[in-house]
Amino acid sequence: MFGANLTTFHPTLFILLGLTATHIWISLPFCFMFFLSLTGNGVLLFLIRTECSLHQPMFLFLAMLSFVDLVLSLSTLPKMLAIFWFGATAISSHSCLSQMFFIHAFSAMESGVLVAMALDHSVAIWNPLRYATILPPVVVAKIGGVGLTISFPSLAHRLPYRGTHMIAYTFCEHMAVVKLACGATTVDNLYAFVVAIFLGGGEVAFIAYSYRQIVRTVMHFPSPEERAKSGSTCTAHVCVILFFYGPGFLSVVMQRFGAPRASAAKVILANLYLLFPPALDPIVCGMKTNPKQIETT
Image 1 (tube, rainbow, N blue to C red):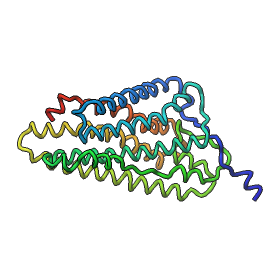
Image 2 (cartoon, rainbow, N blue to C red):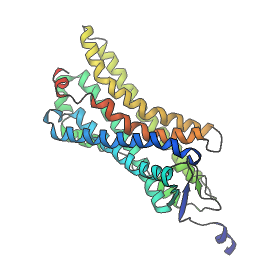
Image 3 (cartoon, rainbow, N blue to C red):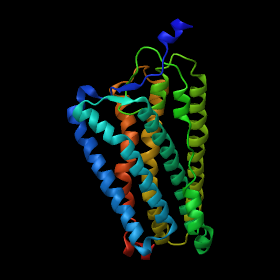
Image 4 (cartoon, one colour):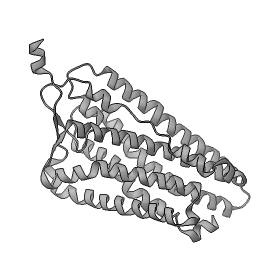
């Protein structure tokens, strides 16, 4: 029993290795994306808050998306830049678990907001006359606020660790931390699989069904102008979906079926999953916050 206590422990520090060999040049696009995320999402939140014509369900969902993107950026990118610029690779176990919570909880919230936006577009095109009654602001707040607070950190915290506590990423990725454990990780692996199937797969299926209904409705519009107008309202949302689910899907595939060790491609792809949506969402969605455009849509 005494010997076991010497070989297993709960580390007070983790080491984030990330892209240490190429941190000089890779830090520039990371810094640029951080700047885009802070300024773009901050401006969007300010515009939606101050412009009365933007107090509509579509833009309330967009404000929720911007808030979630800001939280994701602030919980990951400062530490990434500290690693690249100052070599500050150490992170306390509590900070690591806190970062893990924010990443997974707010990623789940972002996925939920994207589902709510798909519902918003579907109602706006399928039944526009009842749009205001089906999606009043109170309902919008309840739908957009639905997010799964995933218990990945508590699962990782209960595990015993032995030997190395070096994480091959620039942030505390759940499965990367679990792989360092010496105890049974069946519950963690099963929970991650169930969440990926029911949360990710279920929400993607709902979004696909919503757009199937949208396409069927748009195809029955009499004029090409109406079809083009309706299609343009969904363009930004489709781009945001691709930004969010595209890198995430590829990252999961590489995690499950790629080489056991984290290659540079895996690390970069995992970082893009966290960087792309917050940086590009406000640019794409910002085109829909023009009051003159709103009057014509």
